[in-house]
Structure formats: structure tokens, C-alpha cells
Image (cartoon, one colour):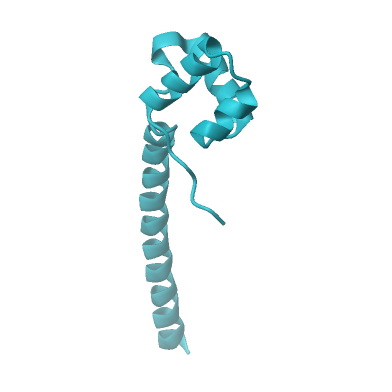
Amino acid sequence: MTKRQKFTTEFKREAVKLMERSGKAPADLARELGVRRNQLYRWKEQLDKRGATAFPGPGKRSETGDEVARLKRELEKIKEERDILKKAAAYFAKELG
């Protein structure tokens, strides 16, 4: 599996500008830039919808990243509690038996 390509905001904006202003077919332009044709159309759509706020960064990492980190910490805490309870149950079972 190949590694996912990352493009800068400037690259995306320039690619859309080239697609709109050059007389080239989007498929030819995409080949020259090393991207897929549908990616150019998606960037254009995002730029049309959001304007200056399009392409804010490397994705939704900031929103979901915090949530994932919180859930990982919570999971680790719950695992520790489970392990403590297992040990306590084994200890008391040994005492009774």
C-alpha cells in the first residue's frame, strides 16, 4: 500500500487556479501535477464553498485527535481497574478456599 500524499494549501489553491485559467483539460493538468483528476474537482468544490477558510490544515485531526487521546487514557485507566479487581478476586478466593 502506498503512502498517502499530502499537499500544501498553496499547492491546492494554485492547482484550482490553473484548472480554471489554463486552457488545459483537467485530466492533463492532473497528470502534470501528479494528482488525480477528481481530486482537482474536490479541491475546487471546497474552495468554492469555503473560500478563504478552505484547506485549514491536515484534516480533522485537531477535533478527533483530542477525543481519541481522551478515550485512550480512559481505556488505560479502566484496564488498570480491571486488573486490580482480578487480583483482588483471586486473593479473596485463595483466602476462602
